[in-house]
Image (cartoon, rainbow, N blue to C red; front, side, top):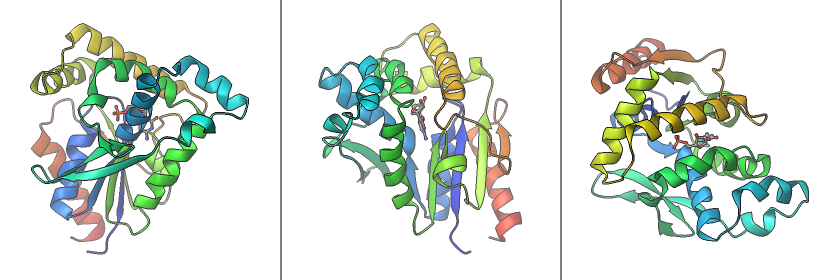
Length: 232
Ligand code: C5P
C-alpha cells in the first residue's frame, strides 16, 4: 500500500494516542504525539519560572522568541516499547509532562500563535515523507489539511476520566478522578474556543465515538476504513 498520512484529532483523553500508536505499529509508520510537544514547551516555562500568563503579552511585544529560541523539542525511540518519547532540549521528559500541573497549564500555552507556529513547522517536517500517524487537536485542519485519512475522536466525558485515571495510576502519577474530570472539561472548552487553530472536526474527517468500544474494536474500525479506502 502507498504510504499515507493519518491525522487524528479529538477531545482530551479519548484514546487518540492509544489508537495512533497501534496504527503506527500495524502499518510500520512513525507516530508523533503533538500534544506531548505542547506539554514539553509548557514544562520549559514552568521549570524556568516563566509565568504562563505573561506569554501572550511577550508575543504581542514581539519578544516571545527570547524564550522560545531556547526551546528544542524532539523525540527519541524507547527501545523497550518501540514508541517515540518526547525530549526537551535533549532530555527525555515523557514522564514529567504527564502531571496534572502540566495538564492544567498546557491549554493556555497552546493558545499562543507564535508557539503553535513553531511546533506546527516541526510537525510538518515529520510528515514530509508520509507514513506518519499524528494525533492532536489541529492535525487534520492545520498541520496536514491534505492527509489521506482524518479521524475525529470523541467519547463520553465520564468514560474518558476513568480511562485517564487508570492510565495515570499505572504510571504512578497521583490525581483524583474528580480533578481529572474537571481538567478534561476545561481543556475541551479551552481547546474548542481558542481563536488560533481551535479543535474542530475537519469536514472530511471520519467521526469515531469510542465510548462503548475497547482498544481492539477501535483499531479494527480504523483498519477497516484503511482496507476499504486504500486497499491494504
Ligand atoms: O494530546 P494532549 O491531551 O496531551 O494535549 C495536551 C494539550 O495540548 C491539549 O489540551 C491542547 O491544549 C494542546 N494541543 C494543541 N494542539 C495539538 C495537540 C495538543 O493545542 N495539536
